[in-house]
Every structure is written in structure tokens, then in C-alpha cells.
Image (cartoon, rainbow, N blue to C red; front, side):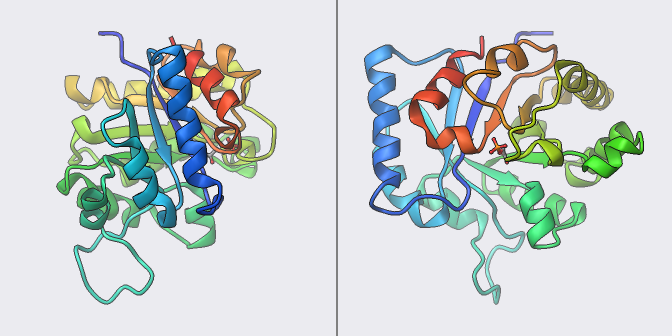
Length: 251
Ligand code: PGA
């Protein structure tokens, strides 16, 4: 299989105000200009309120922009929600869908994630669809079955493989400082690769990111695991030097 270009995504979650968010994007851009673009594709996912100013900063740079969620409908009575077309218009090329914090905080189901995926891809966005087991599910030996079901239901075979990225994020590793071991990551990523490859050649090259307490110290080892094509980074993406180190760990 052709070598896939790694992707490193910085998910700022609900962090950043106008006073510091745009500066964070500017600092990253300065690092790229000073040190040269890394091999990995780099994307930032600021909160919705910072998309417009960060889009302005990243315009015609090598760093891409994405949002943390979108609605599945094109328009309508959905107070507080944002459509995929709105994201595309503001300069987003990507969107994160089905993050475990949205599944937990907003009760999002895999079927809803699949509907959002169709809407996002229909607007030309590439979606990073998140999956991952809880600690309870892992302890019960159900990890592979859980991610298999989530993959089938959240990113079904009818999705466009060219606009799809999958992020494996064990729920117990997110924001906890506890990462999955290299063996655990290898097992799940190998399983996901097999499931995608079984859908055909186009799906076989969908990139598989690992997420869950990736930091500047553990990225090198995690990114070297077979079938890991990059990282979805939360906390450490708020520290630009660390984020840069993580991006540089993806060869
Ligand atoms: P974390 O978050 O790096 O802070 O664990 C990862 C994520 O939720 O994408």
C-alpha cells in the first residue's frame, strides 16, 4: 500500500478567546515559516467563535482549518447549531465528527454522526470521524467489537473514502494523561485497517489517527506504530511548541 501522508490535528475543544486563540495560530505559523513545513499535514480545530479570525491568519498557509462539529441539516430551525455549508463558507476544509465528548455530552448516536458525515462530505469537507471504547468496554474484552460497530454505523460504506479520516480515541485515554499502549493501538488500528480494506482499495487508504493524551514525549513511539497515520491532539495542541514536536514525530 502506498505510504499515506500523516495528518496531525489540533483540537482546541472549548478553549481560547480572541485574546489568545488567534495568537496561538500565529505562533504556529511563525514556527512553520522559521523551521520549514513538516512532512505531516497540519490542521487546527479552534472553537466556532475563533474560526473566522483563525481562517484569516491561516489563509494561503500550509496549515488547514476545521471545526469541531456540524449539523446534519442544510438549514433550518436548529438553534445553536452550525451547518456544513457555513463551515465551508468560512474557510474550513475539515470537521471533527462523533468526538466522544459530543457523544457523551450531547447524546450523539452513531446514526447521527453518519448523517453529519453525509452533510459534511456533501459540502466538500473532509471529516475526521472519532471512535473508541470506554474503560468498561475494554475491561469486558469488547474493544474490537465496539470500534467495529462504531465504524460501520458512523462511517458506513456509502461514505466518500476520499473525504474521510478515522480517529481511534479510547475514551479512557482522552484528557486523562493515560495513553493506550503501543500494543493496544496496534491491535485496534490493525483491525480498523482490515475493516476498511475489506470495503475496497479506496477505503484501504483512509488515514487512521490515534488520539488520547498524545504529547511531545510519547508521540514518536505512538506514531511509529503500524497503521497509525497521524494524531488527533487535544490538550497538547494548546502548547504550540509541543504540538510542533508532535507534528515532527509523524514521518
Ligand atoms: P487529549 O484529547 O489529547 O487532551 O487527550 C484528545 C482528543 O480528545 O481529541
